Figure 1 (tube, rainbow, N blue to C red):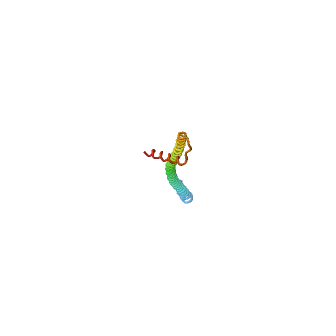
Figure 2 (cartoon, rainbow, N blue to C red; figure 1 turned 45 degrees about the vertical axis):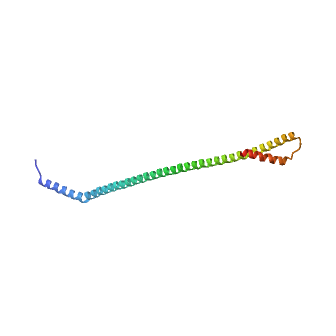
Figure 3 (cartoon, one colour; figure 1 turned 180 degrees about the vertical axis):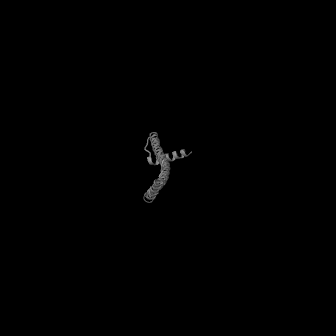
Length: 160
């Protein structure tokens, strides 16, 4: 085996020149390219994290708004139920008041009709008594004067 020292030195020298050329012209651009790619990926991850936080905040905000809307709906329903109860109470009170008025009016009408019937009955009784007396006495009696006397007599009897 024959080792040629000049060829080894030329090979080493060629390797070092090639290494220097690669370092100077190839390695730096390749490293810059990798570094740019790394920065781009990192910025995309940061952007994704920011979007995730925005979405998370929006989701929390939407949930809060939905809760507020639900609470407002519950409040409105409670107000409507309260108003309905209040209206039902007012309707009941108004109906009761109208029924009481109707009963009072009916009582007044009954009392008026009763008084009218009593007066009519008195008049008929007076007429019957006068007719009876007329038959008994066989003469004409002054109806007005006698009617007043009989009514007065009946009123005194009624008071006792």
